[in-house]
Image (cartoon, rainbow, N blue to C red; front, side):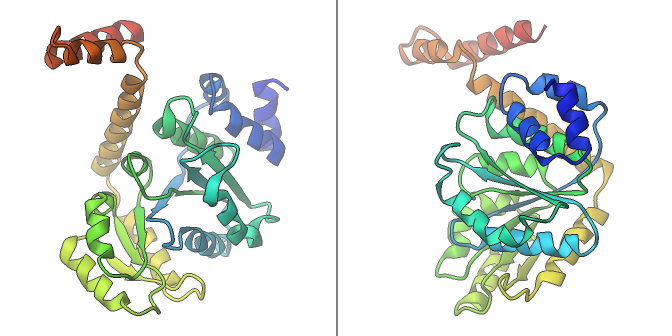
Length: 293
C-alpha cells in the first residue's frame, strides 16, 4: 500500500495500517508520512516517567481506564531504550495493560529508542502526530526514567508526571537523576507501603511541584491524579506552549548535531590540539546551516 492508502485505511479504523505508519515514521520515510497526514491536529500528551519498579505501566493502565470511562480515544507510547527486537522488560510490562488490548478505543505501541532515525526526540513527536491525525484524544508516553530521554519527553508532554515508589533516599536519587527538574507532577505510587509518608515529605522539601500519592493497583488516589493532570491542562498558556515548542526544537537540533558526520573529526581535532572547541562549534553549525539550505 502507498502511504496515502495507509493513512486512509488507518483513519478508517485499521490497526494494522496504523501500526505500519508508526513503523514508517521510525525510518527514512518519516517526512513522507507526515506530509500525507495534512495539517497538524492538536492532541493532549501526558508523559509518565520514573525509575524501574515505580509502577509506571500499572499507573498508565489505570489512567487509560479512567480516560476511556470518559469516552476518550487513548494511545500509549511505551518508550523502550533497549533493542526493538528483544524489547527488554518494558514489553513484558505491557501484560499489565492487557485489559485494554481488545478495546478498539485504545492503541498501545512500544517504541525502541535504539536505532530510531534521529532518536527519541524525533521518533516521539512524529508518532504523536500520527496518532493525533488518526483521531486519538490523548497520548500517554511512558519512559523508563533514565537519561536524556526524560528531557526530550518534557519537551513533548504536558504535564510530565514523575512516578516514584517509597524507599530510603528515593527523593534524593530522583533529584540526582534530574527527574525532579522535568516534573510537572510528582506521584508517590505504592503509597500503602512503609516509608511513603517520609518520601512525600522529602520530595516536598526538594521541589515545588505538586506531590500526590497513589496506589495504582487499587485505584486509590487515581481520581486526584486525573484531576491534577486536567488542572495542569487548564492552567496552560500560549507562553508555556511556546516554551515547550522551543525545547522540542532544541532537542531535535541536538539530536541532529549528535549524528552530524563531521562531529567525530572535529572532536579528534580538538583533542589533538589542532582546533579549539569554539572554532569546532562554528564549523559544525556552518555545515549544518549549509546542509539545511
